Amino acid sequence: MTLLNDKVAIVTGASSGIGRAAVKVFARQGARLVVTGRRQEALDAVVAEIEADGGQAVAVAGDIRDEALQARLTDTAVSRFGGLDIAFNNAGGLGEMGPVAGLSVEGWRETIETNLTAAFLGAKHQSAAMGKRGGSLIFTSTFVGHTAGMPGMAAYAASKAGLIGFVQVLAAELGRQNIRVNALLPGGTDTPASITNAPDATPDLLAFVEGLHALKRMAQPEEIANAALFLASDLSSFVTGTAMLADGGVSISRT
Ligand SMILES: NC(=O)c1ccc[n+]([C@@H]2O[C@H](COP(=O)([O-])OP(=O)(O)OC[C@H]3O[C@@H](n4cnc5c(N)ncnc54)[C@H](OP(=O)(O)O)[C@@H]3O)[C@@H](O)[C@H]2O)c1
Image (cartoon, rainbow, N blue to C red; front, side, top):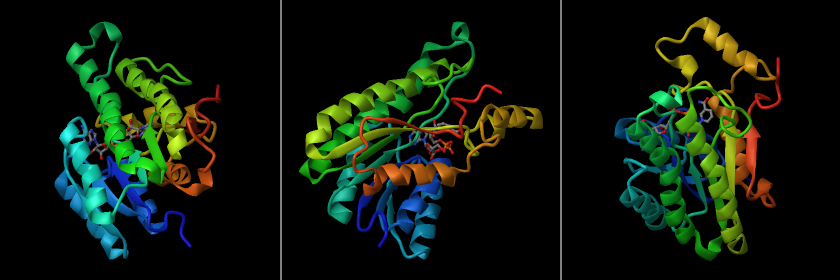
């Protein structure tokens, strides 16, 4: 018996990093998947890997800021797999970085739209598709702006902290329908988006970031995917409205 036997899941940001790891973990646990990101080729590669492993997945490429894409994702879950049980709203990015005095309003808006407004658009369609069937909505937030202020990350922190407020209200709205809603807050994770993988990153920067965590290392994407699996599955059947840290102790570490 697998944890997500016959469940239908949407995963955003499935072309890379945490989302890519999550679709593979979910598929191995029996989920049928609708995967999305902007890069069709990368999505096709993920779908091919899942199918080669005996799983089922369909790719729908697009920009999560587009409501028509969000509607298409839920429509695809319903038409291809008969409904929707889980949505891992994970896509996002750091956006424009730097001191607030130098941030452009365009960069600010783009970050809020990608990390926060897109989550609202997803939830709107996903919760309607789940209806009385129940389900689990998960939103990838971060410890930044929740337990730590990191200079240069104002737009990112505001957008991701906004998600936590959104999750609380949505969880209260949807509880009677047995739809659980949670935010997942990773610590530093070794993905293409990490500042430690930027072209100008140095070994010193990596050592600094690793040292911020109590575990003195960064996460592998699969470790965050496993935390998402907990929130997606019935193992977390009484967990809703939370901001769940999976952060290697970055929030509590002071050395
Ligand atoms: N890595 C970390 O240290 C860390 C820590 C805490 C939280 N997070 C959060 O974890 C989530 C996943 O990040 P990651 O580290 O796995 O980064 P990643 O490897 O760069 O993956 C980001 C994913 O989001 C998708 N995406 C970004 N903007 C999009 C848009 N406008 N429309 C559609 N898809 C979009 C990308 O797909 P395409 O490029 O194909 O569009 C990609 O699949 C993000 O929300 C991030 O903020 C990461």
